[in-house]
Each structure stands twice: as C-alpha cells, then as structure tokens.
Length: 228
Image 1 (cartoon, rainbow, N blue to C red):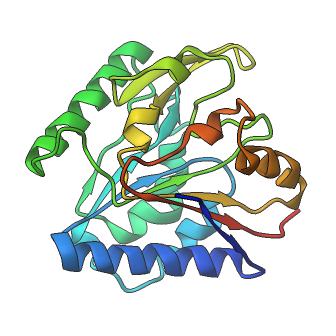
Image 2 (image 1 turned 90 degrees about the horizontal axis):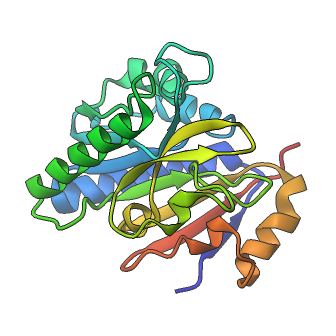
C-alpha cells in the first residue's frame, strides 16, 4: 500500500486532529488507544496542542519509539519533553517509559519484555500499536534506526540498544518488526528543507532506514508542513 501524503499549512492542527480521531476510533473499536510517541523538536507543539483536547485519557496507553541514554530529567530525554508538553497535563491511563539511565542492553531488554506482556494482554504475538509517530532525520533515519547501524538488521526483538557512531552513543529504539506491526504509522515532518530526503524515501530503492517502514497490515501517512 502506497503512503498517503498530507501537505498542510496547518501542520500542528491537522496532526493533532488526526491523532484525536484515531484515538476515538480505536477506543470505540477495541476499548483502548495505543500510541507510541516520537522525540525531537517537531512533536512538542503537537503534544502541547493535543493536551488541550477533550479526550478519554484513561484509555490511552503510551509508549516511546526511542530514547536517548540519559536520565528522565535530562534536557535530551524524549520522556522529559513528552512529560512537560503532554503527559503531566493529561495523565494517560498507562505510560511505559524507556529507561535511558540504566545499562543500554538492560534497558532495551526490559522495554522489550514490557511490550511482550502488553501484547499478551491483548492476545497478540507482537504488541500492535494503533498509531506510531515517527520523525525523519536528514540522513534518512527514523526512531533511532540510523544508517549503517546494527539495529537495522534486527528481525525478532521489539526494542534494542543501538550504537550510533555519529554520536558515539547508544540509543534505545523500536525495531522494524515492532514498527511494522502497527495499524498506522505517521511521519511528521515540518521542515521544507527535508523535501529532497523525503523524495528519496518515497521514491524507493534509496537504502535509507525510513524506507523500511512498511506495516504488514496497516497504513503509512506523511504529514508534511512548511516550517523552517
């Protein structure tokens, strides 16, 4: 299935509305909304706008697609950003935090196990998100799946510790099997200077990590704003 491309001058409002609508549909159909958050600068205003909406937050189950290996109060922490902009305001029913402050492989294994337990609760072989939010890096990475890193080859685990040479640091990240189990995956890109890398990913045969986001039984949307 080809990705749906949504080009918009109302980037934050459109993404927020899409998340809210997806949540309502999921809760009506299955009783819960299972959402994976992304980090970085792009989603913060989306989370801030979303926190002002009237939603049944108790039925939201929040996970994270990746995390830097830092404590949760560190300025680089995806969890801290999401907490300040969204989680502390809305208090979702369940929030599963990646523990970036412990040994990376241990943190990845712990999160992988938590997702396995969640999957069993829903009678699934692999936990299935209703929606996974992803960004796009200038090098074509998404989550913390960077070009020429070991995590790109993972075929079994849900979460791994991935050493990223350009940062000389580990990251915790969802794997492609986890991402591609989702009902819906949304790329949010509000930076018109990234159009060339977007074009490469969408054209196919680029060899870039983001191109491997292909849900087995789900859809992919790209929300493209005109920022920067």
